[in-house]
Amino acid sequence: MRLAKSMAVSMFIVGHVTKEGAIAGPRVLEHMVDCVLYFEGDRQLSFRILRAVKNRFGSTNEIGVFEMRDVGLVEVENPSKMLLDGRPVDISGSAVICAMEGSRGVLAEVQALVTPTGFGNPRRMSSGIDLNRILLLTAVLEKRARMNLSSSDIYINVAGGLKIDETAADLGICAAIAASRADAVIPPDMVFIGEVGLGGELRSVSRLEKRLSEAAAMGFKTAVIPKQSMRGVRVPDDIKVFPVRTVREAIDMFRR
Image (cartoon, rainbow, N blue to C red; front, side, top):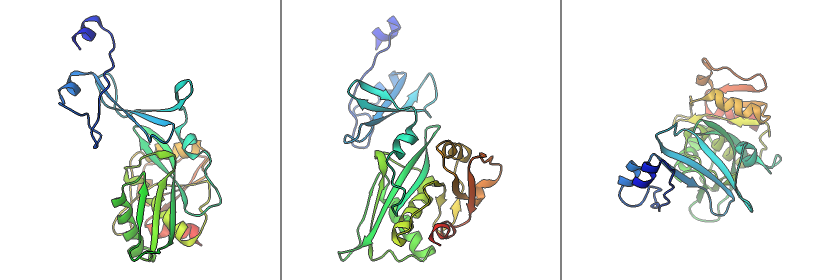
């Protein structure tokens, strides 16, 4: 470290991380360096996300998306296009959400499969989304949207290996579950943005304009958003929004 600072050269220190994702060992090394980067991704997939958790020279709200190829790591200029590539348009249980990765809006597909259970207790499994969040949203759908899910297995997957940890994906998850349960196909040009409360109400989300702009840039024509989020939001010309108050209203839009 002294050599790098005295000679004004850049030095990369590669270390181990714990199961929780934190740097292993004493945190003194984390305080000494100017930037801490995490290289994330599923080992079964070729895409990786470079995320900064400390940066003395800039913002930590930016990410880099890369693809591992034969020539090495290649930057992915349009992550949304990459994540939606190959998305089926005529299969029930598929919904598109817009998540924020740093300051960048990223569109992702949430897939849900609801089938009659063959066990005494219905199974709940998820990949890319916290299972506790799935259990909470399932309970909201049963209580507030009058959906019978107590005798069904529910499987949730985020295509492309992306990890979603923000509540703005709640509405898309609920829409995917409801569409799979009713065997209904959601319009392929519709995106869902909104947090779902325990009362079934839709709550505002941050940076809605950026999310809508990303959806419009990717060719989406309609967006279902919380009605409370409409105040002061400039909607892009290429997309039409449907503001709704509850998750039941949103589901009824494509169940008719």
